[in-house]
Amino acid sequence: MKKVVIIPTYNEKENVEAIIRKVRSLEDDFHILIIDDGSPDGTADIVKGLMKEFPESLFIVERSGKLGLGTAYIAGFKWAVEHGYDYIFEMDADFSHNPDDLPRLYDACLNQGAQVAIGSRYCNGISVINWPIGRVIMSYYASSYVRFVLGIKIYDTTAGFICYTRDVLETIDFDRIKMKGYGFQIEMKYTASKLGFKLAEVPIIFVDRTKGVSKMSSGIFGEAFWGVLKLRFRRIIPRKK
Image (tube, rainbow, N blue to C red; front, side):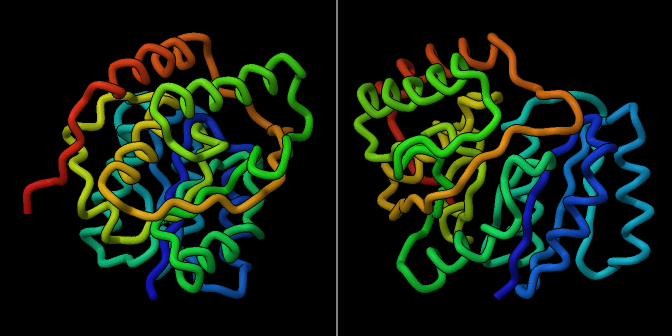
C-alpha cells in the first residue's frame, strides 16, 4: 500500500530536514510530499538538496507565495491521488505532531475500519504540552462549538494530523471546500462524515513547536467561527466522476 505524508511549509528551515529524516527512518515506507509556499528562508532549497538522497520517496511542489493551509493540502491531495497513493496523511513540519504516531494512524485505517483517522488531542482528556493555557482553552472549546453546531461526534475537530484513505479524497469535491485556514480542517472532517465515511480518533500528545514561528492568527479563528455557521446550512454532495 502506497503511503504519502503531505507537509506544508513556509519558513521551516529549522525543522524541515529533521522532520524528513525522521519520517524516512520509520519502519513503514512513508513517502513525503512537501508543499512549500515560496519560503524566503530557503526551505525549498533544503528539500531539493535532500531529494538527491531520497529520490524515490521525497517530492516537492513549490507555490508562489502564502496561499493558505487549505489550498496547500488540496494541492497535495490532488497530487497524491494522481500518483496512485492509497493512504494520504497530513502532518505539520514543526514536530508538534510526532512522526512515531504515523503508523498508529495508518493502522486505524488499514486494520480498524477507519477511512479518516484523526490524531486527537482531546479524545482522552487534554493532551497538549507547552501551549499557554488561554490557547488550550480556546482550542478545546472551539472543538466543542463545532460539535454543537455541526453535530459531528469528533472531539478534536481542528486537528491537522490525519490519515485519509484514497476513496475519501476521490469523493470529496475540493471545489466546494471554502475555508483556507484551520477552518479547512473542520470542513474536511464534516464533509467526509456527511458523505458517509467512518471517522476515528487516535489519541496523541501534541507538543508545541520549539523552533520556528507559529502561523496561527486571530483571523484564522474568525474564519473558522463564521465558516462553521455557514457550513451548517450547506448541502454536501460528492464530486462528479
